[in-house]
Length: 204
Image 1 (cartoon, rainbow, N blue to C red):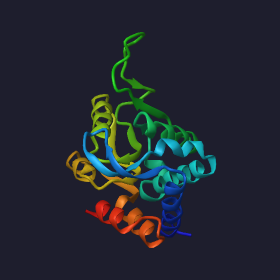
Image 2: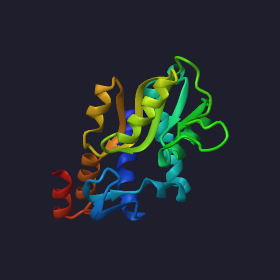
Image 3: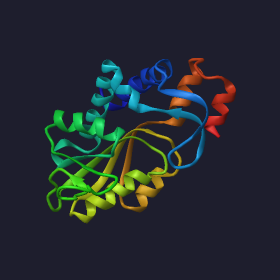
Image 4: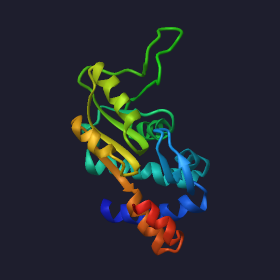
């Protein structure tokens, strides 16, 4: 089975799982960016369901292999905190070094902000769980580039379609999203797992 067909099957199953496990909820939520949203997706819950977690990790690996190629990856960068969970397992499975950027420099020891070894001109693929405006991802990109890392690709499970892709493009980085909120909403509405009001609010 090719990646596109595999991706479509995964996303259809994932859309149902997100609602059934309470990972995706509908209502009125305030995001970390300060924006309000008619839905909230908490992918930090996924690792609590090992079978689902395993499938998501496999999706990341297949995406990396198909869209980028393992030979072109020097290291995997994780975005704390939720993105780091996935990045750590993926890096281990594909046998690549793991690095990540702290939100703030250590206040003890060496005081460093980047954890792990990053070599000059090392090609780093960044993994995060989902992307909204891309603020946290951009901070990671900037910090790694300052240390000589070369970042051309970011891989996420879900794109909320709120400007993240455009911002990354302006920094010369390609966003590779396994799915996006529009695709998930279409599938959930077709399966009667979302009412018309919820669907309209998300699509708008």
